[in-house]
Length: 100
Image (cartoon, rainbow, N blue to C red):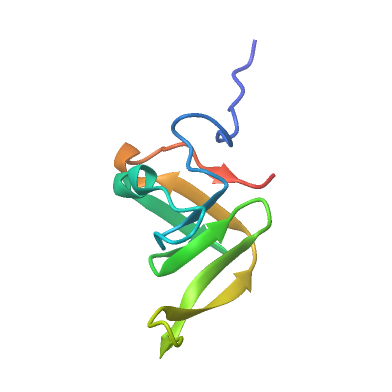
C-alpha cells in the first residue's frame, strides 16, 4: 500500500469561515473568530491589510488609502482573485480554507 497525502481541509472547526469582516457593523463580523487571528493569502501573497474576505466568491476588501466616507469609515475597494484563510493560532500546518 502506498501512502497518499491528503489535501488541506476546507471545512471544520479549525478552518476559518467562508466570509468574515473586521467591521463590527457587518453581518459577517465575528469577534471570537477574529481574536484567534486569521491569516489571509490573496493571489499567493500573505496580506495583513484585509478588511473583509469571501473565499467562495474569490474577493477581498482592502482600505483605499486614507480616504474616509461621510460617516468616518474607511473607504474600501474590492479585489478579485484566489483567497485562502487559516487560523494563525494553530501555527504551521494549520488547515487552510480555500475554494477548490
